[in-house]
Image (cartoon, rainbow, N blue to C red):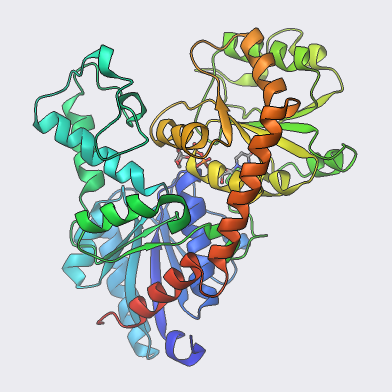
Length: 435
Ligand code: UDX
């Protein structure tokens, strides 16, 4: 794309202030910047992104959830841009931030939705809305393992919310609003054709606007730039340097999921008994309802000894890319999942909620690159799962399949590949939007 044509185009990004949503939005910003667009990030005052990590962007804090401050700012921005001979081409916003749509519509600026998750998740939300409309919730427990029609390979138990009990109205409203794209002129998804070919076709049939699957976003933009809210502990990389290839298990539950004290203790015992070196991310708020420092079970650290590291937050993409890391125990958030696929690291899946359930189903059943620890966490099944992944032939086969998936994702980023072409289509699309 010619610099001279696009540099006059400004794209406004409105991210949700959650790590798993902020990261793909900033990554998309870096990619569009590299394509010649100016980037403005209009973000919540609560948990702002670190502007020092993106000196090329303009950051503007907004009061939460209110369309008025957003609209006032957009009016001012549009005037400033006009004076400089520039134009605001579009607002790209997180799919949960419905208020942005009303601002965009009112000011006649095209709005584009960014989905940070798999395409199948949006269809799964639609399916729950359909079940509710057909009065099929509560759904019989005995049928939870049945396949969901049209959402193969998902089963009813893999849907984003339990369906065996009534779902409160406010949650149903949230689902309905999540699948409503309102007046948006396009949808961008952090997924790719090689992972979800048929699902993407179905999604495209449901929504008449163009869908741009572009993934992995972090491999297309400024990969080295941190998007973390928490400080990344870089010491783990030095520690990894001393470990043999594929020997270390990396454990992280992303930025939201928590464990209770019993699960923490069982995990520590399972790890200790497995004999496998590890890096275990335990955020200060990783334990249900309490600060971890005050409640770390007696003896857990001593039990684990020198064989591993317990840290609060790491540069995850660097950790996964390190040759010493041979497995990833994850809650299966989509960012973690796609980051692991990108580095060919097989997974232990322990989904907690939302899209993590369907992501785990894809990892374990469809792609066969992960194994799931189901039911209650106990030290015996943890030890067994760790050894299956890290030592047994089964784990080696999963690693080989992950490596094939990694190659496919990389091929999609090359000229002629699906993500490469989809990104070009998106930049062309934005450049031609009416101002
Ligand atoms: C949330 C949802 O829970 C998830 O299911 C959805 O797909 C996206 O939004 P989160 O739970 O935080 O996200 O998980 P995930 O999507 O995996 O995102 C976590 C991000 O934090 C990843 O990009 C990961 O690289 C990063 N991370 C995690 C670190 O940089 N360091 C860490 O120590 C742990």
